[in-house]
Each structure stands twice: as C-alpha cells, then as structure tokens.
Length: 131
Image (cartoon, rainbow, N blue to C red):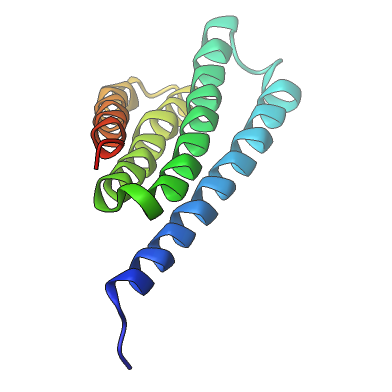
C-alpha cells in the first residue's frame, strides 16, 4: 500500500489532535480530583504546585490542538512542536503530580526539563508560522 507524505501528515495531525483532547480531558479530571479528593490531604503549598501542573497541562493540551491544526499549513515544525508539548506535559505536569502525591523531592528535578520542552515547542510553533 502506498502512503503519500500528505496522508502521513494528516494521520499525525489526527493523532496530535486526539492526544491534545485526551490531555485536556485529563486536566479537567485531575483538577476536579485535586479540588475534591486532595484538598484536605495536601498542604496549601503542595495544592498550589498540583494546580500549576493542571494549569500547564491544560494550556499545553490546547497548544497541542493548535499545533495539530497548524500542521496542515506549517507542516513539520508544527508537528515537532506538538511532540514537544506532549513531552513537556509528561515531564512538567507529570513530575509535579508525582512530587505532590509521593512527597519525593527528586521529581522536582525533572520539572525544568518539561519546561524546556514547552519553550522549544512554542519556539518551533512561532517559526513554523512563517513557513
């Protein structure tokens, strides 16, 4: 079976759109879980860290959806931006969730790597706007 580059790009765009939607869904679920189940179990400081994870997950889930849409015009750079947003969500938000839920400070060392992935994703999306 012959797969054109356009067909592959469309499939990747659909995958990014689906993952963005799932990450947004999970951000809402994690936010509700935090507000209802964790509020009494976490300190105010830990709850603020958890909420930061939820907020950044939602922001970047929406950015991932935007990258999926823009990939039809901007191509590869928007796709790479999408993958970096995924990596950022997993590393940044994921490490904050684990830090709060396990109280292991070592997870905090992973968070900046997720932040770098977010920054790189936004840079690629910006550059991709001109191609």
